[in-house]
Each structure stands twice: as C-alpha cells, then as structure tokens.
Image (cartoon, rainbow over all chains, first blue to last red; front, side, top):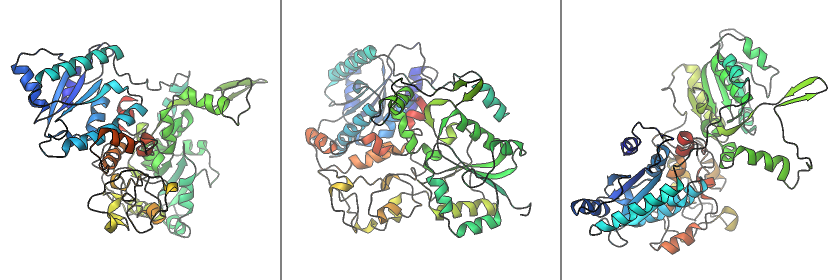
Length: 169
Length: 323
C-alpha cells in the first residue's frame, strides 16, 4: 500500500513544490472498489489524485494504515466501504465506522484537518459517486494545501552544531 | 574494586527521577548488581561530572542506562557523549524508549510552552514578562542555558540505541533481568526490548474474567465508579490499554486496581501503540448508529493523550513527519 504514496510522490518524499493533493484511498473490494471500476468502464472522468489500495473489507483497515499513509506523505486518506447493512461480512463496515470516528478525533488532536480524513459508503452501483467524492475531496485539499510537517528543530543557536560535533567526534 | 568488572553508567535527561528511584528500589538486590559491575557515572548518587566522562576512553563503559527523553541541547550533548563512551547504550524507561510523559509536550508548540510556564500560568508573577534566554551577560560574566528545542525526542531519535528497558518506571525485576542479560554476555538481537514480546493481558491476573465479547455503551474513568477488584477492567468500561501494551510488569497497575496506561510500549509487531490502542477500544463500542457511537466516544475526554500517553514522539506521525 505504501508504494501508492511513493508512486504519487515520484521519489518517496514529500516535495515542497508539489501542489497537487495526494490521496490514498482504501476501497473495499465488494463495493467501493467495484464502484471505481464501474466509473472506469463507464468512462467517468475524475481527478487522478487518488491512489487506490484494495482491501477485502473496510473493517480490515487498521488505523495504523491511515497514519502510515499520512506519515509517508499523503495529504488525505479516503476510506470507501459498503453502505451500513450491506457488508459482505455482516459487521465489517460497522467496525470501520467505530474506529474511524475515534481516529478522526485523534487526527484532529494531532493537528490534521478534518477534510483530510474521510469515510464514504459507496456501493458497487455508484460509479458516479466515486467521481463526486474524489473530486470534492481533491477540491477541499487543494484549498488546504499540502499537509505540512512542522519543521524539525535545526538548532538555530550559533555554535550549537559545533558543540555537538565536538562531543560526537 | 577490581578492574575486570564491567563499567556501567546511569544518566537522566528529560525525566521525573522515577527511573533513578527504580534503581534504588532494587533495595538489597542492588548489592548483587554492584558486586558484578562497577558504577562509574551516576549523577543522582555519585559525584562525577561531565568532564570525568569526557576523559574516559571511547567505548570504555560497558553499558550506559539512560533514562529520560531529549528536550534540551545539553541532554542531546550528554546522550551523544555517553553513546561515544559506551559499548552499549540502553534506553531505560518510557521517556527514553518512546518519549514518555514529557513527550506529551509535543502537542504544543515550543513557544506556547514557554509562554504558559513563564507568563500565563496563574501562579506565575512575571510582569515584564521575562523569558529564559540562552545567553545572558551579568556584570561581565556570561551566563548560559541549554537550548530548549522545538520537540521532545525519544533517545533513538537522537543517537543509536542498542537495547530498551521499558516501563514508567521499569520494575526492579525488569532491571535485574536486563543487567543479568548484559552481564552474562548472552546478548539478544540489537534493538530488542528487554521484556516479553506479548500483550499485557497474557499475564494479567484478571484475564480469565475477560468476556468473549465486550460491548460498552459508555466509557468510565476510574474516579467515576467503584471498581470491581476481580473483573476485567475493560469489561467495566475503563480504558485499560493492556491489549495494546507489552507485558513485563506483571500487570502492576491492574493489581493495584487501576487500568493499564500503556507505559511499556507496544509489542514488536505494532508500529504505533496509540493507533493499536484506539483500534482495540473502538472495537468495544456496542452500537451501529453513528450518532450513538459519537455519544459513546464523547465519554473519552482526551483520546490522543490517552492512547499516546507515553509514545507521542515515537508515534508514526511524529517520528516520520514531525506532526
């Protein structure tokens, strides 16, 4: 999955020049992934900013996947699952719902804007909804700009680097 | 003192002193430790200074146990110095292992911390308002303070670390086991955490009372309920992080009738303890309705602070992207 971000980045690192938002999508194989496939076969055009990772169920998406995607340079993460009640495995999308509501709060506490993490229920028949959701998310992320890491501390104090070199020498 | 005994050192950085206390808590067992090693540097107990360490040959200390996270330039210098002088550097305790309680400061920008502590706090009287400066001239004398860096870092985010002894603080048993491993020369793989690689629940005395399925309509804080001393704390609605936390402490907090707060870090395969804890806790919610789920989650007042209580600097987001 991580290659998805690295592909989108070109070199695996967040580039300061990149202005196009990079989104990692985790799509359930039974519904949203099929919807994206339908969008493709129906020649529906939508923004190419999302790199899709197919998962067996939205309930399989560990919050670590989402954090890892952000940590590796994604500007947004989109989860696509079956509508409530329609899960192929009965309960998976409810697990996803519970986790993602809590994860959304944690992300906000970590300073990540709400718009960057989105969960959508999209059935296999809703190809056009994939377009609408992706385009809308890209639009919002363009307005927000790239997810900026705060700058690592460069020890701006004169002589600090030298002192560190002395002890390390 | 014989020269053959391996030299060991203890040092502290951004920490509370509890890890030093933990060494003292070895009580008479510390005599067994002292019998096999030579303590050459331990600022809290012995009067040796930095220049004494500087004069030691490189790699002459067999092992340094360093507790505390890294916040100031002075701490970073000492970490690098001790790394250079030691064959093995051991991150000792949660702060040094994953950032610990001081790491929670990473929720706030550096300047806002100084502002709060030196200006805004209700108990602070500082009308001018004076903030600490790194260089100050006073009657021809130069006074200096270490640089207070932007972020708190775990030890391995600053220097190479050989082993980790987790815990806040590590229990005496974990310390003697770690020392035994090092003294016997049967060194585990570099980078190992010197504690069992399984979840705390596996050694919890209440594990048999954990129901097959826990379904909660509300989370509780310890002060809100009378805690049953025999039943699984998760089943009682308390945020016990045992399932996402490494074993080794023998469930010391649970034995004291308090939920695990996650100080021993995560087992090996977990990359982000907070995310794993979050996942576990969310799985206990007994609802399929979005609004009700939100209401249940609202009974967790500070999820990030709870799940990343000891591991914010080492979390995926902070370690890799500085967020």
